[in-house]
Amino acid sequence: MFETLHQYRYHYLMLLPGMILGGMFVFYPIVAACYYAMHDWSGFNADRAFVGLGNFVKLFGDPIFWSAFRRSMIFLLGTVPLQMTVSLVLAVLLNNQLLKMSTWFRTMIFLPVVTPVAVIGIVWTFLLSPFNGPVNGLLLDLGLISRPVDFLGSTDSVMPSVILVYVWKWLGITMIYWLAALQTVPDEVYDSARLDRCRGARLVWHVVLPIVLPFAVAIALISAVGALNVFPLIMSMTNGGPFFASEVMEIFIYRTAFATGDGSIPRLGYAAAAGVFFGAVVLSLTVLQAVATRRARADAGRIRA
Image 1 (spheres, rainbow, N blue to C red):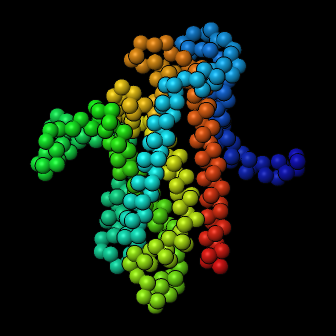
Image 2 (image 1 turned 45 degrees about the horizontal axis):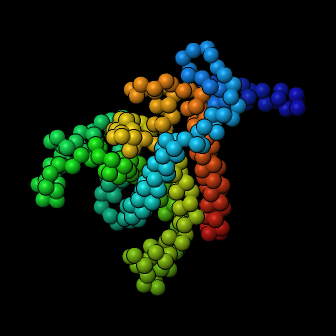
């Protein structure tokens, strides 16, 4: 063992900075969250009472927690299918080398991905405003509505509005995933399909989709993990409102830990327990993503062989 360490000492030395940063910003926060989750602590004084799994017992009996968790799942189920379907259609269209300006269209669709989330949230808050907002102005001019709609101020429309903004923001990255999957389809498959007069939608449905289907699982899981990390967008657009209608798990954890604006006492230990539970959910999806990606690569290799 020591001979191996000495032989690869320079390799480990190069890994040391990354290991230190990972320990500081990844592993230590995870361990600290698990530690605080077992304490009744506000986070603003030195008094910490060990309660074991008491925070988790309270958490699982908290209807506000389950409401936030349910909204996170609704957000996930509302974004992932829509995001995958629209991005697949765009990827199929833009994968055609004969399409003029396909590179320009790809760039325009991908541009929101590299735009800061806070900027996206502020801009869309203005666009969706019921007070001279461009979206309401357009709908009024087209005669689709008779009066302005408060998209972000109504409990009925706030989640669909945020879901659409999220899909628009991250549509480009999912399209890139689909384009990468489409590149694995051999040219011989297209040539054989054309000889059999299989074109257009039939070509996509009966030939292309069965080949790229293994990648769909990995893309869906990647999109699902992303949909559970929506704190910056919702925070900049709605702050969890109105009346907690858009309060997903991350907003619930933040509000519980710091009790911003509602007059209650911060409960860092309770928020840590919620964070540990939610982190376990995200981790399970990440593990599924790794397994699905490995299987997709294996299936793609068998297809090419």
